[in-house]
Image (cartoon, rainbow, N blue to C red; front, side, top):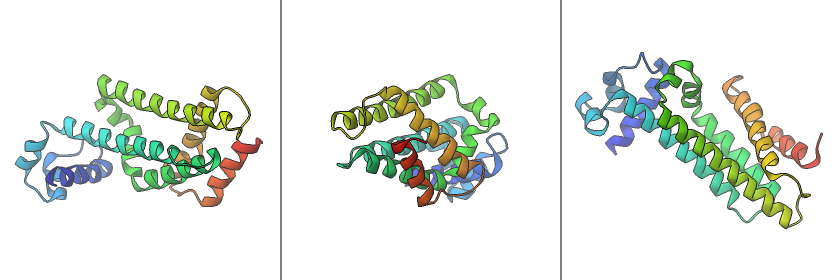
Length: 187
C-alpha cells in the first residue's frame, strides 16, 4: 500500500518538476508518508524513478497482450488495442512525456534502456502473431507480418501518441476507427 502511494506520488512530482528538480521529501509529502518511509522501499531517487517506469511499461504491455488475446477479429482486436492504448496514454501522459524528456533519458541507464527495447520487441512480436493468425483465418491477405507490426506501431506513435503528447488531445473514437479502416483498406 505505502509502496504504491510512493510510486503514485513520485509519478505526480516527477511529471511536474522533472527528474533532477524533484526532491525525495516532495515525493514523500505527495505520498503522505515520511521521507524515511520512501527510503524503506527505494534505495534512491533513481531506483524509484526506474521502478515507476518499469511498472507503467508492464501495465502498457499487459493492455496490449490482453487486447490481442480476445476472441475477436483482427480489426476488432486492433481497435481495442488503440482504444485501450489511447486511454492508458491519456491517463499517464505526464509520465510518457517524462520518459521522452532528454533530462530523464540520462537516468534511464543501459539496463533499463535494454529492457525497454525488449518490451518494444515483445509488443512487435505480439502484433506479428496477431497478423499471422489473421492471415491463417483469411481475415487479411498474406504479407510481411513484421512490416505490418512495424506499420501499426508507427501509427500508434504518430497518431495516438502525437495527438496526446504533442497536441494534448485524446483521440476520438472516429479517429481510431478511421485509422483502422485505413489500415484495413489502404489509402
